[in-house]
Length: 397
Ligand SMILES: [Cu+2]
Image (cartoon, rainbow, N blue to C red; front, side, top):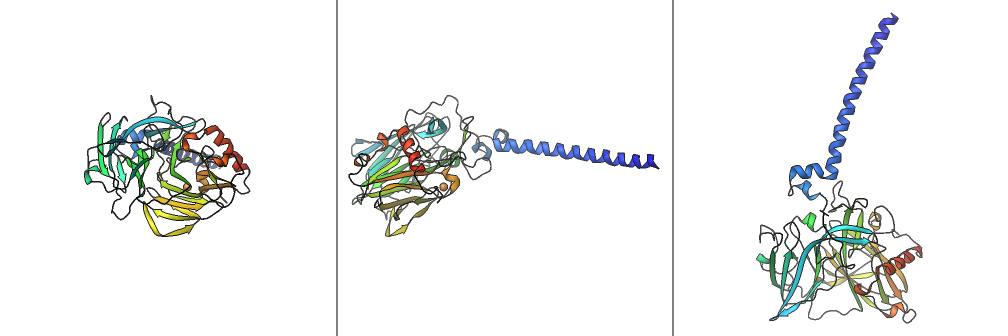
């Protein structure tokens, strides 16, 4: 009897063990598949460079030099040729510093993130000569501009892609699409593998200056973007709303707080910020200390400016917001999604900058409005940190 019981107990234990091994093997295989999918390696190879998974592969960093510039978005000066404003853009990959010691591999216009700011008066004839020095094809789309269809920059629809080493010349008049607006904030960006190339840095702002532009004491463009960076390996992937590609770094004009620019204004200054959604995510941008007026949407002035203290900036959108700096202090302007004010999980970071409103004549710093060119990164970082430490509330508040 006892032997019989022992036999059945042993048999049951053996069966259970076999089943457990089978379950474990299945789990191991699945884990392997998931790991490959997250890293993008195996599916990328299987799907090829143009498959969905290929878009998730890290930007190639082999032989990519560190950027020679520290500040992105500087003004691109044209050459005048028979009344045509001629601009040059060169696409190339660089290692771009978003924080001291933290670099992303970026695809850029002219070696900077964001690309240089192009400005032209309403109606001006514009020629942009684009040389592609990337190892992959590209195009430039003029977002919101009334270009001839052949200049619209959509690969295999309006033009063949610009192959590596090739040059393409875009020509158009600086007139908003639809022709109802006389000027405002517009955008240019790659339209080849847009999720990937735009996400890795290929965008810049195009300002059409209206004939009677509103005057402001301080004016800044603020381009909002996201990055997926492995800070250990430096592998940079285009940030997307997909598992394995979610962003862990966020930049305003190519810098994460505390490396973002401190915008210095005097009390009473009228300030215009041109907000540009250059990434793939929506950011509720919030200003402390005062409200603002949304004066234009997508390069179109609003007949009745809208009062707000948060504005949702989605991908491709532009909002021009204006305010008068009435209260002295260090007021922050930041994304209200807590995760977006972190650097790889450390806060404060990401989409936050300081608007430093000085009482008139009370501060030597207030006498000079800083330009991006004049910004010393290290100094600004320290001041940014001090500003955060001096604040009563966390950026989420
Ligand atoms: Cu955000």
